[in-house]
Amino acid sequence: MYTVLMILTLLASVLLILVVLLQPGKGEMISGMSGLGGAMSSAFGSTRAVKGLQKLTIYLAAIIAGLVLITNLFFVGGGNGSSAPKPVTEGAQIPMTEQAAPAPQVAPAPAAEQPQQEATTEEEAK
Image (cartoon, rainbow, N blue to C red; front, side):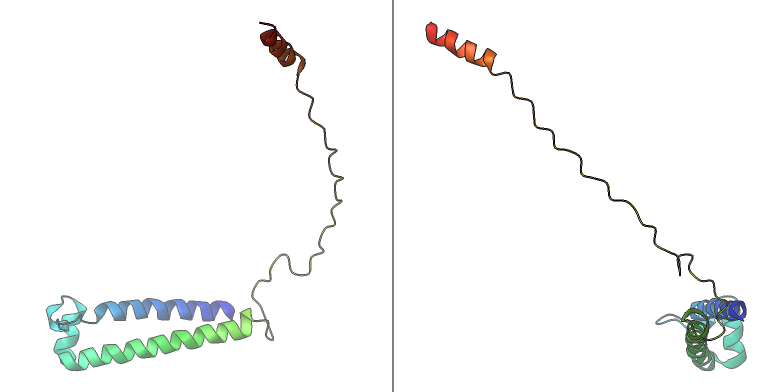
């Protein structure tokens, strides 16, 4: 059932894209378009074709919204009869890790101060 609803949603989405692309832009009418748009305007009249495409757009958008809500309510949200895949980590035990002891702090080696002191004593002697 989940797959059927997803296929219906996909088909309605593709139809909605096509219907939106068929609608005329601002300032142009369907009769100026080539292909299906011209056939629709000659069969129904340009105003009826535009109004029909607008209604079809609204109906397809409502159908998509309804299908998405139904799919989410019954299959994704944990409702009854869920056949959607569950997350792999659901119900898994958390592994316990040992905490490593902090590494001992090593004191920095003292700098070789004797050669510097000798240099200062030599400079003082001059």
